[in-house]
Image (tube, rainbow, N blue to C red):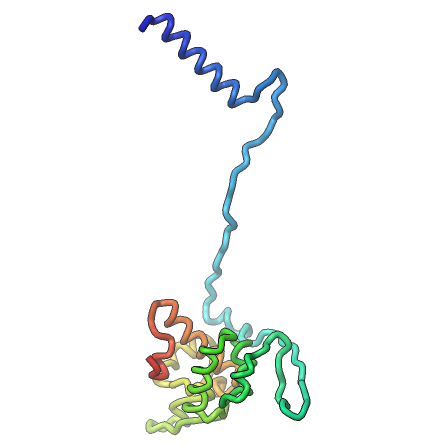
Length: 192
């Protein structure tokens, strides 16, 4: 190939690239390049002391009184008809507000746990053989021996576990934490 021809072809190619890159006319529109970015999601980690006081979100309640239903429902929680006759159904609104999903299969299993562990009594207490008041506490019977360090880190006392919302919120954290690790969330209640 001829050197002059090569240099001319290279110069022509460079001019074409420059023209395309800067615009096609004597007065090209000045545009800024558009940079596509994905939304940024940040996750904030809390220390146990920062979690204290955040256990009770504000809720609005509506009571529906008719010949069939006399317990309070939360407006945002509507449950499948097949769940209404299950044991411990009165605690489903509290459970969903405490983090549990409004899912028929999950709530059926949670109903079995609450019935088996506490007979749906939020003040249920399994007597301890070591001089403590209780070994297991509340609706889901949180075990003091297995979880007292975690409760302390969350700012909870054993008596807090008698509160239905606190107990169900803690049970949800236990269940969902295990599921997030690829483990069976129901294992603490021996359902796996």
